Length: 456
Image (cartoon, rainbow, N blue to C red; front, side, top):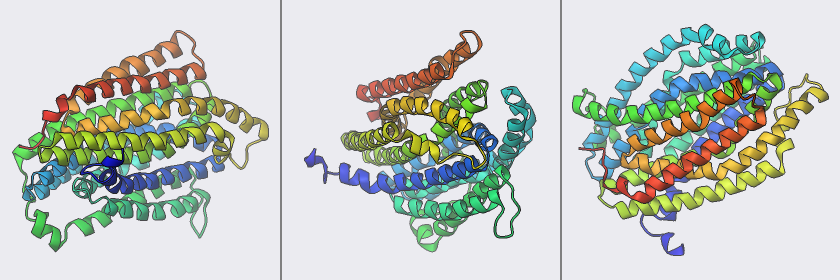
């Protein structure tokens, strides 16, 4: 283990690239966590509405983010091969795609009424869900642009810039969230609408910072970030081919989780609120591990760009060990302090008996979460490595089969025919994570990904 510390693509290199990305994702987690704490303190209805609406908007955003974020792998492999002029061109293909994506998602904002009618949640919850979803979808192009522009840095291993930019976004989002939700400093009290506006505003700040930093004279000289603006149809075709596969995988994964949340919502406001709180807490472990996963993709891409698959394997194994330590720590915290974590979300105007019911359900769900976080770390690490190699078609197949057969179908049958309670549905969700982990470990061990490339 110690011999891998300073070795190329060993623990030191993984931490150097992944820790800033993990910190960057942690800032995203903090934004979402505080956003939902503020809404939880505001009302039970608000916290019950925010996760279904947020997940539905992210269901659409995730598809386009999955495509745009694959710029990271192209830039990593072109950087590894020393073909720097292709870095700027790859970035521009992602920018063109992001513009198209924004237009499509803007139109999807007007589909709120039929989408939330299908969920069959209580009317007061539906009204709040539609408000939150519509505002997020109007600004949905911003996180897609964020994924494209951040790839310029993460693909080259310069992840501190990503961290700083996202921290600044968090510094804008958190106080603005509190002010707009509760109506302070001369602003009207907007509740869940204010939370959505604060989120979109922070995303705009992040994109603006990236644009200022990327299109500099220094980057133009090295990577042709301004002069390589012309569409490259061959490069765009390859980017879309791999990116769309990645995007569909994102979409299917989020769709499966979305269906799980919506089925839980049919069991009542208390179950939905408790599940939303626990899934919000889950972000504390998930998003930093997802940052490490992005770092793994970059390192694997750079190593394979140099035709060094043994280095790619070393980086993945080191990242796997680091992620397991993090997930184990978070699992212990989830088991030992469930009441404290859930208590952050307690609404100010709710009675002890009503919140006691939320707490009772939440404790059970936290146990399930503690059980699956380790396997979630395995999923993120090895899926990141496969994506960095270009093995996105297998990742898509694994997530599709696992999501539809191990989560959506059992949830559908359980909710509609077998009268599953919330505990049984959470057991299905936990089993789904384990199925994905087995798929990705077996594929990585097979080694087929070592001969793959996405660049010409």
